[in-house]
Image (cartoon, rainbow, N blue to C red; front, side, top):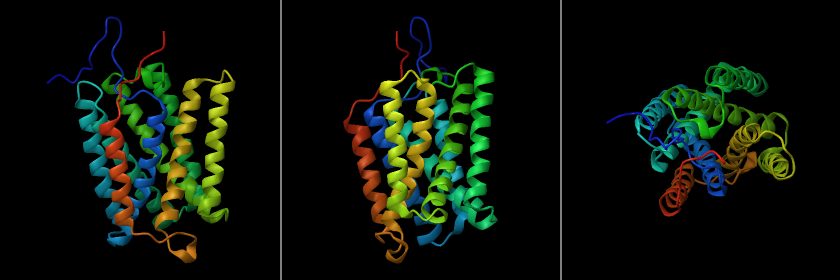
Length: 256
């Protein structure tokens, strides 16, 4: 089977989904699942951050390989890769900030630099970082590296805001929810680059999901609800599966 994407009359079809409301709903659910699922493996199962990262990194590489190998956009494959990126982002950020000890502020700063560097190199090499142009294996590699970095950054940023800054999980959720609302207002009321706003929103959904996930599964004396990580992860996964299978999804297309 060829790995080349399907072609229209004038251009290749994007391998990532159209950015509509359901995209953002699934993205937030997936980032929340990444937090509860990652914590379930590293904490509830007691495997630790390093082993958890190794497990989820292998799943992430396999999922991205399947996504790149697929001849066209397929929602199940795509969202499977997104979920894999959120779980490895959770465990990798926790390993870096807690096990290595660089801290939330240091981890967030380092990951932000890496994320911006990834976008810069992607732009220089491919000429565009817009999702409608993610139609070749090379562009997909840049896309998924950027995705993984954004997911890891979001985890560290969410932990820094909730813990170090002292806002708590709900306070941090309000902050990131407000920032996302500001991006929506900018999208509707300004001419700021749509690509820039997309990546801003994509990054912000990760810490929002991270703090919501922490609120669900962290102990009561730490400000959480202390729900079962396994049950929360299963419920989130069921919601994502329902949205992916029951609602229509199509590849992103360039506006004419």
